[in-house]
Length: 198
Image (cartoon, rainbow, N blue to C red):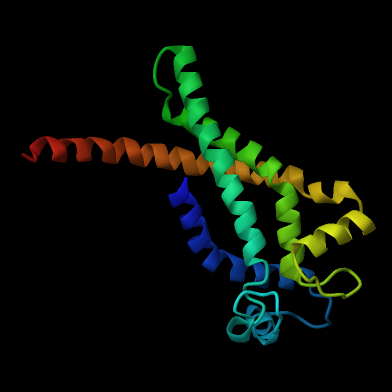
């Protein structure tokens, strides 16, 4: 699990800037057409005390901390559910699960993890946008949380839960299906190699 957490932290070094630019382009209320280049330049010019390395990267890493706070619990929920579902299903049917069954287990784990971490996803998205609907900059994730609770109510923390669960379930099916397929191809090769080594 520690390796998964470190992997998520490194992956977020790429994922967060991409998400910031995408979120800005999707919600830009300024007139005219926004391009990736113009949005990137705009984000790079943003200097904020609460954004990771903002003197160098502008607002590109706005929301990095909350993204880590979403991704690590997500992995800690998804992977154990996936593994336990495979074990339980295999025991129930009296044999190991098939590739498709393993993919279903991954989809199930992703669905649960995405539902549980949706409030963190909402906080992450708001942090990346940088300002509330009145144009007031967010100070940190707690500030976002407090403003949502005061202005919009707790149900806002579940905004987008259905599409999030749906796309992550589909992604989990594909990811874990591909993982199990690759594992079934590579494992015999590794086992053969080990058998040849003295």
